[in-house]
Image (cartoon, rainbow, N blue to C red; front, top):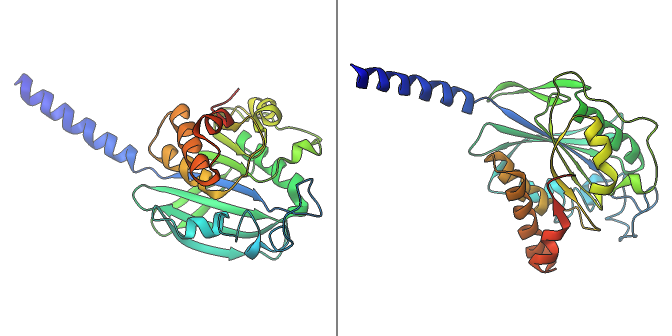
Length: 257
């Protein structure tokens, strides 16, 4: 009898666990397009540094940009691509992980609106502007302030300007957060703490915020790895593409403050 009860409890636990495992999770990535004119970046060739043209931009349509790199990834399937005519976001992509119920929404912000991209990032982390996105596979999934993981990628605009305010976390909001930009630990830590974030990955020095780092860290996050393990994935990817040495790459990424 005891053995039967144990087997029944195990079966019940397995069903509950399987149900929870299928609950969709959402990653919202805010990409500030590289912009030679409106940002304090080291100038890049004109076609890469035109922040109003996602198709050729360094962080979007170029070889290691988010749109191109993830469209060629075997781990992510592109579901939709939407060009937007109004507001700071020029294009939105929606991907789904091929093995897990994880969706990634990536927004390409006009490079001249980098301050808005930065502010929106902190708002989403803190739980504001919560919204839903309809998907054929899972119904609706949370985005913006409802996303499970919020990521900023691009130039660190806080090296050039300060925002007028930094949002405080809404009650019970605790999102995972990453900031893939130069020296994000120094500039993003305090605002992320105000926003109640669980820091997963920040940077300690100058770096190229390209999509191979994003792909590597997301794979670790999808599989529920620890922040340390996710940073190790980032370091390995960065060294593989930048040939900077694994020790230097490891010093570049940190789980948080």
